Image 1 (tube, rainbow, N blue to C red):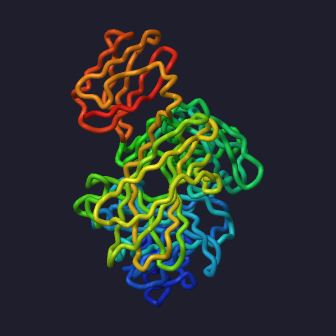
Image 2 (image 1 turned 135 degrees about the vertical axis):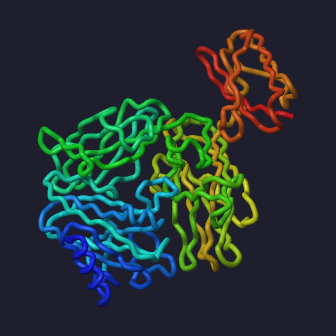
Length: 505
């Protein structure tokens, strides 16, 4: 009966124009289930998500009288049964200046059919919070639940987690906004596997930094790993690591050695599709999407960025960290393709940089600039970069396009980074093989260095085969199984490793 009364009240407010704008947002004061009517009117405000023509929204607000945690969700049985698709933005400020505070499109990230919404966040007493349901994917009416739970030990804000600051082969530096009330400590649970349920696999306790945010280092991670971690507030000696306190999952990526490749399809869920690539969104495409089968090779995922029809673009995407040594030269390749929903695609431009973090201010090494014009198929681009110092490098893709006459998307896919063998390195290299280009067999002749193994890697960075020679000083390898193309041999001894280019006829 109580839920029914709340639904009727909500509908009565909106039928009188209540809820069609921030200024007329419906006030929610009690926990319960509410009814959002069909979203065929109401002013949409761009905050947590971008603006698209024709979107409407319905507005609500709440003003807690004490600190606590708010949960808002449309993930309930009636909505699932109707296959509804909702999107939610939560904002702070006033109606003339709203800032995204929390938001959710799919209640389970990276799950294709998780169409409903779920947010849970800490709130401060006597502060006004607005939220809007919008019609981006579905304009039908639906029900949602609102729950406020008073508590003095508050979690961090999910959107208060910053991009990973930096990494080494065995550690990642992370940063987040401190929780309301500044708890005494934070507990970080992490492990080297994607898992949204785990607890206490590896645990570290950090004292809260003074000020608005905390910066910490997660150490003792295996080289080249992808980790999942959660952050919990510890208030007093007995922390409550429940759903209202622990926040995550967040993801960290230690630096990788070469060769490296990324096609945005690999190893879900361990790599969360992007394998540490941040900045640009990703899109899954198949024969049911628009554009259809638009990844490199057809069905799959690709990263994308877009132009503006009014101003210059300045949008960035960054790879994960790559270990390079001073003077090391690498080859980098990627593919691009343009798309527009209407009209001819406008030309776009991408500049490739290298820097010491996933932040544009550190991207100080301009490598190459490219003009993107092809919407018919994918175009390959290549560049070389020589590391000025031994460090972890992040490669940045800057969308710096001119204003276009047509809204255009640039899709990026199949990024590869492989070592290039310099002439002086070749001259001093103890590993030599012939012939090259090769037919069915290659032969190494080394009088001093014993070869323990040779990894054959293709141009995308994929390991094709590892060969262990029978005669380590005079080794003949059968490579007849290789298709025509360019490959890399990573040859290893007990004290030496080198990468050689192999051309297969």
